[in-house]
Image (cartoon, rainbow, N blue to C red; front, side, top):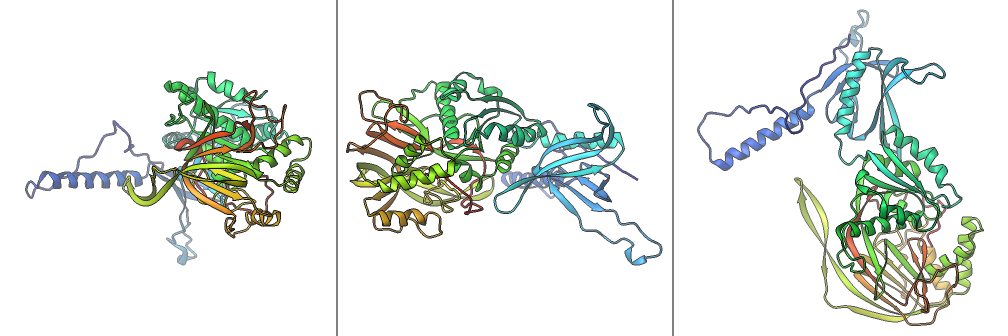
Length: 547
């Protein structure tokens, strides 16, 4: 009943090419000849892609199906039996179903084994694991069983399916994993080993796991390990963990090319992608990449090799590089974080609410001078691989602008910073990869007006539509803090320059103490992350701690 048929592969170097049948009406010009050859070659390639590689009969669900495999898709159609008593059903065509091979992430042989049996067993068929898009931005894993008791038939299909799967681009085969065991409620280790690791194993991804033991452990490992043996790096934790790993990858990139880390005008790009599994108190980076805080979705983006170039900033003092990061806040955002860090013994949500209320009660502005280099964004269309795509082009002005005064909060963000409490993003006037920084300045105002501004983040209304808020799209910012601000001392802020005043900064959810002068530059597409570029979150009612 089965009729498996395998045809020759028509892809890749070294494959035999079918010679085109040229017409003999005369010799056209060389350019026309080339165009005809290109057209014939494209037609042949399309035919080869659509030509079935295998065809056979499997049981899918409770129906016997005619299954066809091509390089691009797997399709099946239920076999309709002809009944001599019901002539109306003879030759009736059933609707065809199919899956795209690009959605498949694992192929396994399905066997029945006895309890305690580790190897062998009765072969039942081939199991195909695939990634499907659920509602909104969620991804889910699914399985299709091709049931057939023939060993030869199943092994033939298994080898052919694996060959296609191994040829898909950007799929990681080896990952370096960092797990922060202290993230959030110390759940990161459990999340990784219970939810993430089984999927990596199913996808035949080799992993080397480091559970961090002290502050700076990640940086020390990234400085020493051989990154050429990995296709990507994965961190399991919150925004602080992700930012630290990204910073470490970029420091390693500078070291590999011999660049001085204190000269960051044009830093080298990170060599391998970074995946972020959300498992922290704040997960803005994962929200921004995936549109949702969902461990399974983040894991499947890594397994499927979905890559997204992302802009990053360098933060420098007048003498040295301080940090690479995605976003920063100074003023209300950093004071709130500093207060929350002092009360880490409290549950996460209570700690966040307490810090916000307490900081609002002591609301005070900072006297700053901000110099910035504006960026003019122009939309233009470029053609890549035969497809037209819209890009943003930035033209820098050589004239720096300056504002000064008393500010309640200053936000400098290279990414939109989406989260459930800010469905439009903390910085909706920038994108992941457009090469710009959103500079958002909140001037001194009354407490009730500032609270109105904060509440706007959770609605669809423009949170910047207030007379005391100014927004700019820039490429560089220089911050000069002019007042003696109240700041924590001792273990909370860990001053980096002894004998000098240091001020609290919120860098991607990490509390850092920096001097009064900081220079921020954006570096377009400096790092590649596993994920997709989304502009909204799924469920704005979820809890969030974005400050």
